[in-house]
Image (cartoon, rainbow, N blue to C red; front, side, top):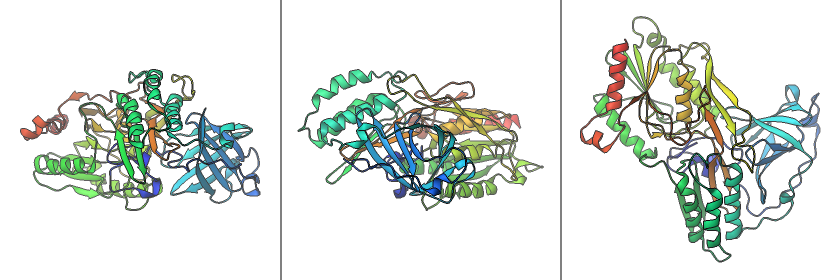
Length: 492
């Protein structure tokens, strides 16, 4: 889930960092072009010796437009629409089946776990994401997977349009008539359409969505382009913008006192006068120099929080009287890491948010059953349970927004100050076009504990304040920060 720099959704997973990205982790990121899907492997004893239902077989995923096969020590995946099928991923089995026939697979730093629930039902869990994906057993791969895929401009347009038609979840909310878009742009595409012209057509077709999780990237020999649009009046959280804002905060808000830096520079902390803490989080991913993922980032986050959320700051005479959490420039990342931070800021479990995926290729109002995700207090570590001022703005995106939802359920006062967040809470669904270009879209609906979705307009502040505007910089002001300090000082 990212919009800063080159989107993570559009880059092979192992090539990460050097730009701010986020991790609405998808099952497949890049596929082979023009392939014919191979038949699924035959089952073997590595996945069938467990008692009860077996994970072996071919499965259609609820939502996401994917088909998965399990057998022969491998998991394979295909991205499908009514007109296309693209092989995307092969993952090898890791270890023997677990309880109930659960099987674990790994590919390129990603961990996938398939758990059979009944003869015809199973679930898939992807490391670093929250919730599970339902699987339904089917007899065979779709017929489109058994024939070569066309690769020309017309086929590329049709697969692009069809993938959005079957998976994008917010046409009504964002005021776009997708059928009308096809009627307008499809006649402009023909066998002789150039790469430049085709890219311009596809980019123009999705631009009205103003969805920062919708992106198109061409990265083929001799032709590289990237198109993405964010909400009008907001700034993407790029590395350059993040550096500029950090320098401003250190000089203006912290009187030149440097931030203590943790998690590969993603997390900063400073003590403020009056017993107030200041915690700045710039992303929820890439906390180490290695391949990002929950296995590496989770332990690094715990180490950072152990240095910041200490017993001295959470209890006794030196405890925080209030904590400012600043996510005004946050490129998103993994929801699991946001929930882990929230777990250090509560002493009781509570509902964080709900999650659903669009689940009908013909009806964009039908979704999978709502999964409820919860904040769980950290075990064996100090926890802060006092008042929080959460600073947000238009450069608060994706997993930073689900983190904002997660803090809303705290027992102690949590006051959002600043501007609406970007409004792109969904994970990204990532696909490859027949000509090799890659793109992403939003297919999930996140909601707060009351079932309210903030996709589009973003999560509103409780106290409105300008965030990093030209007027603020010209006057050397940081109104949101000052308002947070005043609020917490009064409450203490």
